[in-house]
Image (cartoon, rainbow, N blue to C red):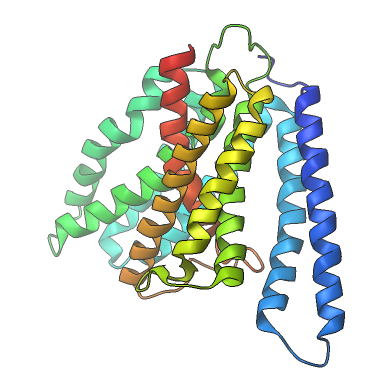
Amino acid sequence: MNSISMLPVQAGFVFVGIFAGLLVASLIGQFLSRRYEHQPHPTINELNARISSWWVMTIVLLFAFWFGHIGATLLFLAISFAALREFMTLAYRRRSDHNVIAACFYILLPLQYYFVLINWYGMFGALIPVYAFLILPIIASLSGDTSNFIERAAKIQWGAMISIFCLSHVPALMILPIAGFEDRNILLLIFMIAVVQINDVFQYLFSRLLKGKPIFADLLSHKTLRGSIVALVGSTLLAACLYRITPFSTVQAALIGAILSLLGMSGNIVMAAIKRSFGIQTWSRLIRGHGGMLDRVDSICFAAPVFFHIVNYYWT
């Protein structure tokens, strides 16, 4: 695929649908705000904040994806930087870890995305799970600080895996050589992001509308079992409807959509557990109504690598 290219026509239709949905959501949000303007309602305020943020995020995605492989890679490089910063801000506890964390930001992060950009699959797949896994503890040991060494090393390696390695699989979808799907790999990114993010949105909405028992009271008290089931069904149906922008059949798209949704939910749960272990509710306040970057992409962190390898194994 060309490094710089216009979006395929199918992508344009998807973005038109997204903008139409956001317009309807904005109108509903404004109607509710005016109806209850004399009765402050935190849920409505949060809903409108989320909708406003989604407008911005969708426009950013459209702009980046317009430039194909380069645009997607640079966008997720920036997203990884923000996510890594949030994670390492909480993981950094001792001055002796400074050099290791600096290596993550100034060596691993740019190298990982450089390998994605030049289509070097071997190094892209091995840099962090193999080389960084060995080299980061070596750098840490040179400080001479052995206090909680394994715990500190594990946190930093987890941060690199989640924030850099996992997220880099999104633009890496652009390098997959799929027969009959040339110059359209950007549609795979749109498919995955749409399914995973719609699942998150449906969980948020239907957990509040349907109420019920929290799926994990200690971790995700605001997400219910009913809401999660409706979200899973809804995102699976959406995936089936989007099969035309993929190399999948309707059934394959639905099955992959269900897998992505379950992985996204798992990402929410695991990252919520990590947040609780750090004693926080959100990773930061970077995105209005959503929290931090990791709060927004935690589901993608878990879905992207598996989606990449499913497509790579069965369709290339």
